Amino acid sequence: MITLVKANLADIPAMQALVVSEVKEGVILNRSEDEVATNIRSYVLAKEGEKLIGYTALHIHSRRVAEIRSLIVDAAYRGKRIGQKLVEFAVEEAKVLKVQEEVLVLTYTPGFFEKLGFREINKEAIPEHKIWTDCIKCIHFPVCNEVALVYKIS
Image 1 (spheres, helix red, strand yellow):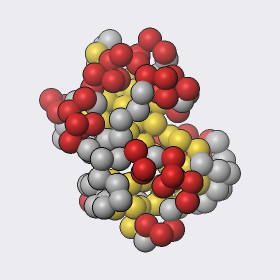
Image 2 (tube, rainbow, N blue to C red; image 1 turned 90 degrees about the vertical axis):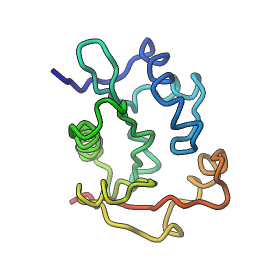
Image 3 (spheres, rainbow, N blue to C red; image 1 turned 45 degrees about the horizontal axis):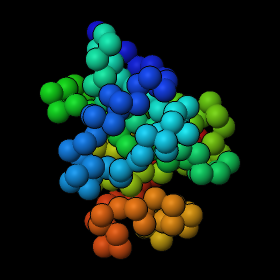
Image 4 (tube, rainbow, N blue to C red; image 1 turned 120 degrees about the horizontal axis):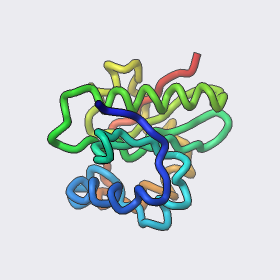
């Protein structure tokens, strides 16, 4: 049985191990253990028993905008709607936290997010501080092929 649980500090080594290949490929940004620890309350994990099989984070940029980050599902578990459940959890969490307008995502798989109600936006609409705090760390910066999408909070 797969369950979704909030992360704790003891989960960090398994979280770091799960994203190694995607970080090397530049699909997911490298985040240090300290950065993950600082933001541990943002993460939700998908587990099968005690085994970590996926996770994502909901990062709050402002009262108006939150962002889904670092969505990963173990390759052996893909195609089983685990990513969908993680995204839906994050969107619901944004609503509970009273994010006023939208949930942002930058992705190489826009079709996945479009099926969940996200709509593509122009990258120029992304909050400027996002570019200077995250995007500048990316191996693809400044030539980025990610697509920006938002989910409008209703």
